[in-house]
Image 1 (cartoon, rainbow, N blue to C red):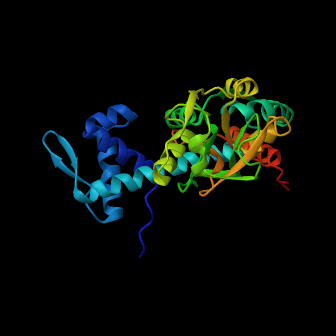
Image 2: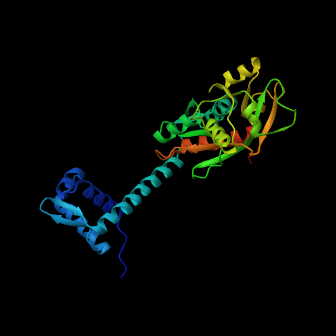
Image 3: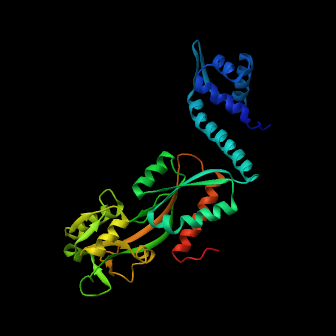
Length: 306
């Protein structure tokens, strides 16, 4: 005769006893009698055909099998709780605050459409928008301060949870024209170009310094400026140059104002990545906002989303 599977209430009680290390304290915590807790534990052990605890005069301690069962039981209980929350979410319109961190260019070009569509489709959802650089966005994701963030990468992301939405090559851009007027510029030639770059630990700056060491040159950085608006103002007045992505140049509407050459040998792609926090499970509201944001960013890069 096949034994039935343990029920969730028995597993919850097992977890509480393991947490407190005492049957009597568990009984007080859950509002049951001590004999009831003992009977439930014995029934669970008989069902599993093993001892989960060593009984001592000072309480109980997990056996070796009990230690292994602890993680499995916690995963089952957490999964059941998440299942119930998800189904309840599906049964009602999403509500709550969703915090999104956007890069500066997307704050200008995507935020209005994101706000309009979320308000129209999900009136119970309140957007909270933050703006900074990728390094800060990742800190916010790790701490759970933001639910969704756009970040940039200068190497192809390989970790799970990093969805690449767009790729664009880096160009050197400024006024007047750079070099011979050719469309491409080998990375080595940057040694003679007065550059305005963001300060480390900005991802672009770190990548540029790594490549410069590899090809044996020293970058001619004449100014460090993290602000995109400050960078643009500088190249309008001074003979210095930026490293922007081709998409950023077009997005800012300066492709007809300044000369640009695409960096090659090596090519330097910039990846726009959408990430979600792992600090807490995403609410349905956050998942809906992420879907809208994904479509808007893809559309901004000329990709039609069906």
